[in-house]
Length: 405
Image 1 (spheres, helix red, strand yellow):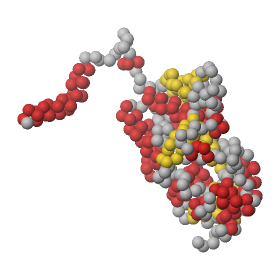
Image 2 (tube, one colour):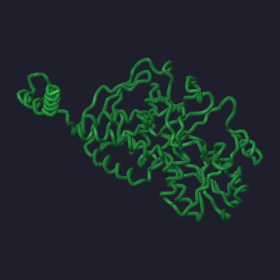
Image 3 (cartoon, one colour):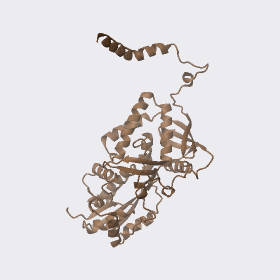
């Protein structure tokens, strides 16, 4: 490889990305490694992370405030798409990767770097997400993947880092690998690698245990405009504040825990624990409002395409023509998704107990069985005759065939 002068590294402050700094300098011969940490609302002390990168040998250490675009341009798209990978995981971690990649490319171009780098390992999903996103946005940039190349065990990686002053944050008391942002936490490794072992309460931080959740239920109302959540209990909130509020309310009642075996992009199965209280709550409310405001054929088509959208995002194809086309379809469906949904939070559950909309397709005098019923009952017989005609003709044809035999 031709010697590179300047590289921008996606930096989290963890073992792998910290070890990447001396590794890029010593093994790749790169003089200037610029660390870029993304503030996604994870609540970390970013000043300490910034300093840790400098201590590890970074020539510069930058922090980008990405919280607002993360929620407005990524999380809210996922809510409008009711995005649940394999029907369960609301993509809290996956949604952050294209935004980080986009920022990496922007910083690299601004500073005149020839390459970008990340610390993803060969078994994970994030390597795919970063590589594909960067390749779509900036095919002229080289993508360096030291953690995929160095062939060191975890213990050897830690030892290599310690040789260059990089401390290891993982201890025997905390064996888990955790990714955190404003949308949730993903937890894996350690005892969780046995899929039959129940996660201990120490794993969770955003959601209360059922035992500690309030004994009394709490009813909340979430308002939407054009498919976007805009208020909680009648109080208008900006997108970031709304996510924070939803996290607190759902988390307090123990809602939002997911324990699943998922299919990674690279073809293996992994056991993942997620905490996504606010995001999961908002998706559930949004699904319910769509049931009130979308026609049956649009709703059924959208449900099918939601699975495709979630797969694309999980698999790293945020910047792809199909994803862009699906966004256009979803945006069109959301014009009339206005109204509010009432939810009862209690002991790990979020039960829908009411919904209303001024664009509702639910017509009371057509649905009622009372005296205000305007449905034409006489039309039902003819409808059923025409609706069932193909099946009856098919049955008659079978009967004639059997009689001939």
